[in-house]
Length: 126
Length: 162
Image 1 (cartoon, rainbow over the protein chains, first blue to last red):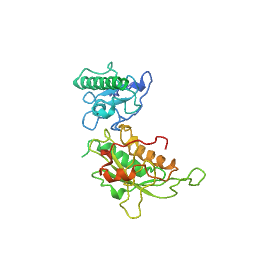
Image 2: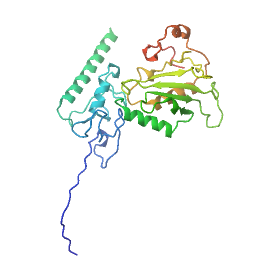
Image 3: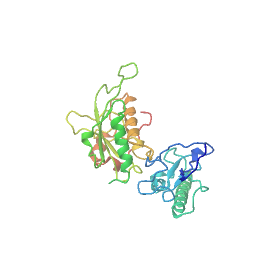
Image 4: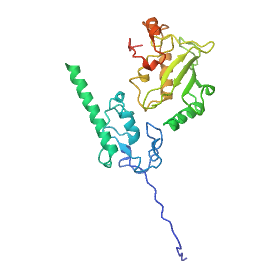
């Protein structure tokens, strides 16, 4: 049988790389622990998934969040800079993250919490 | 509309469709367009042997959860109600007679990974593990000066063993 291809459409799908998926094949439909929307969707304030609403991968822990969601949490002093899921100190993995204002701000918040922690520890010892 | 409307709606629907044992949501108390106040009937389910070993027997208590503007970054405002006829505040060393509850999950222990469900389970287990039918030692003094909103209180933690 001879087949003549007259027309064809290429179709591609994309998924965010997640910290817990490293090295594993397949895709897990996981939700952001803060807004409970799938990672491939957006945080509540964004309309378009993708680069406009990037993900943050945890480095100390394996938890992922929409960057806008984790920023809201880390802006609170009450967060003590901890991961909402496992309460370890939250540090993002800079490797996979683009350089942007959002990630600079995230770094600032992480640093701020670290300073507060260090200060707290010294006062405690005195 | 609330920024995290979708998440709150999901939580609400889940609690309606898959109720937790002993916990009933009262949808009539919730404005479906607003989703900021939820009222629950809490009772303790019997143990696996079918017997109720709790000091609360099969009493039903009413709990109100108010979602704040910054939920889930900020914890909700949670208290027992005694405004409805026949409803009482459970006797517990961490529950004040005005319905305020001293529980770290509702303050410093909160993270956005917690939910209404985790609060309900936590409060239900607080009741089921308690054997002391008494109020906190400073109940009278606290209730006299307590703010209406339990979140405005800084609780003294008396005894972590209860």
